[in-house]
Figure 1 (cartoon, rainbow, N blue to C red):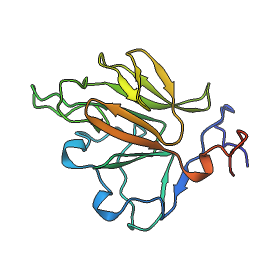
Figure 2: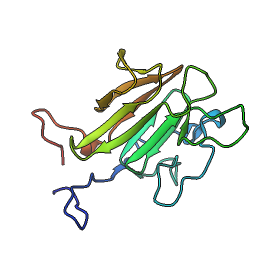
Figure 3: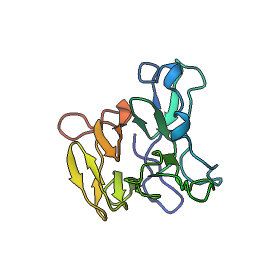
Figure 4: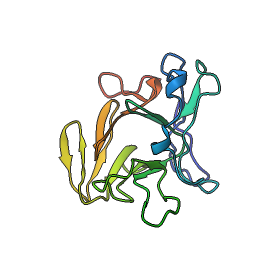
Length: 176
């Protein structure tokens, strides 16, 4: 089965179902309060954290970000990561709030789907960069993401996970 296309013929990544064995237990279905988005994204905008309708039911998502204290289902093609501004008391402008550490920029990074490379990438905006699989990446870099890559921004560490159907099988073919 090929990838869906938009009216202009641009290939679109397929959204997959995370099976019950992949779903997070009920206590970890949502981000903890310090990681909750501080605003509602505009309609058609970025990602929203998604709790499974049933703790053992499937969740439709492109990818999953899983940390020791949170789970975030990527349901659109772009999500921003950073910290909220504590000085002005206003809501932050990031989809995933990584806490109030000054080591994390207000808009530190973005995970987005690249149509050119046909994969998700992490683009770094923060001056302190990030670690991906224990390798440092500086501001301005864009890194292709693979299944089970471990990302660390500031003190927050989480794993980038793709659904089984989207993980390349041995030999570079997808397991559809």
